[in-house]
Image (tube, rainbow, N blue to C red; front, top):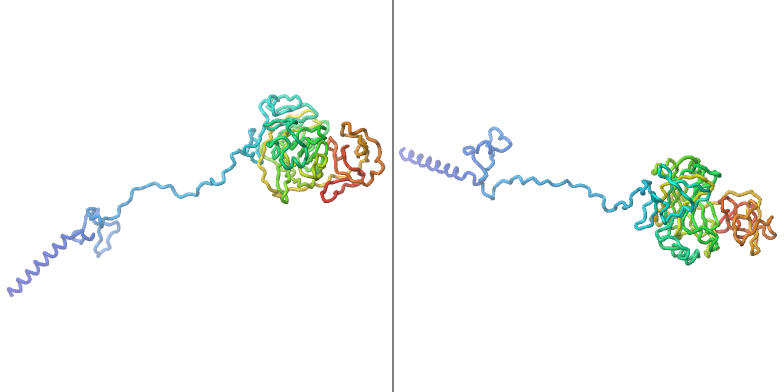
Length: 452
């Protein structure tokens, strides 16, 4: 019995020592017993389930190997966003010109530009050819019935710097006088028609040539002319040389112009059609003169199938397009004795280099004329048709109308030619014979419209 009590005492002592040893190792493996639970501040965020031993968070004095992960410092990082669209920046040119007028095409980088100066009478690049006066609202007034206000490039104009008028040479090099001639351009002007003797006459914005006169056989006077008529009609004209016109059909553009401001734009730019250089011609009006709302009223392409008489100036083919630039761009009108104008500009634009096709159309023939034909006699012996019984082109090579059609002239064809007043009738110039009373018809594959 005594031995049993001694053995029990020894066992109890050993067990007590063992428990004490276990208690001494608390924290070595990150787990504590209930007897040595940490204060409440060290308890985990999730309470223990009743009847189970709750897990406790080890003290911060634990060894590095078992130290709990600490919350890293807060670093502000911007959220991931779509990068800005910097790969295709907008052109540096603003969308409006110096007057706040909307530009339809961007200005060519480094290209030629001109705008009406605060005092245009002192601008060496601007030649109104007649007196102009400033109005109270800052616009300008022209009181002349024959207006040709010319604008040169920064190079200026000099006939002596034009070595040739040969159409094939001009087309090959792309300019008449200088490499920076007006070629791909957007011309803009705002006008107010106050008085006119002929309501069917028109404003013309034109370029791609020099001076229009009878010198050098008129070959300096090439142009495309955007015409806005006082009665609200519009049409393009092609002047292969001065004076030799081919005219597109009229288009309705706006209501009659008298007594109100209206904006008018002419755009001409080279494009490519079937691998060959052509010219796209666009015309716009700003009917309420708000500088912004531009309506397209005509859009066509001259791809070498529109009238023309380029052989007169050395061209290989008559209807070749006018693809070259010229030193003078002109704002023109006739038969108007009182016109106010403002916000004129000429800008060299970047051509798109191809024919988009949208809205473009080829030339169509003018309406037939039923007026009786008369004839002008050429000093060199030939006779040439003239409607209305008068010879519109002067010069020593022509004389007064010589009466009825000369013998031998019936049935021969002629290219279309036009009067200096832009009416639908042939002007007196060197061309083949024809019978004027016969209908218009296309002449061969070139689609140049002729009589006969």
